[in-house]
Amino acid sequence: MKKMIILLFLCVVTVVVAKKIHQDKVDPLLLDNIEAIASEETDVPTKCYGSGGLDCPVSHDKVKYIYGGYSLEIR
Image 1 (spheres, one colour):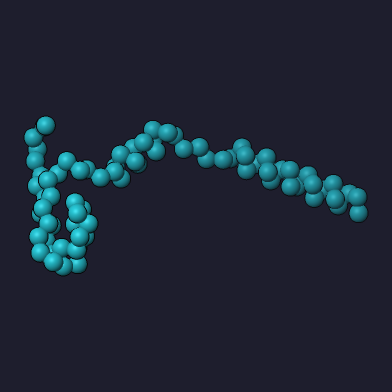
Image 2 (tube, rainbow, N blue to C red):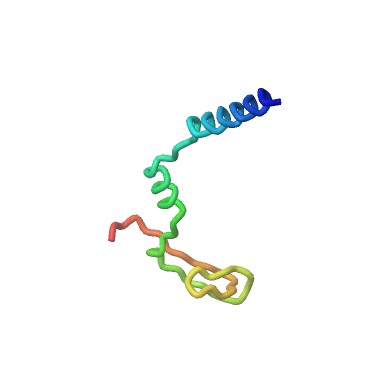
């Protein structure tokens, strides 16, 4: 019985050490890039018209149409 307890303890220790060694590490630059892609761009002028089922990104009201302008100019 004592040998089984020691064997079980060694198995548990082996599994814990193996998980720590093979733990995936995420590069902070990767996390910064994901955050930059996911962030909203608020510089685009947006106008909302009507009454409907869309959420206006400016006023958060329910509207029918959302118009946004895009430009290639550097501001």
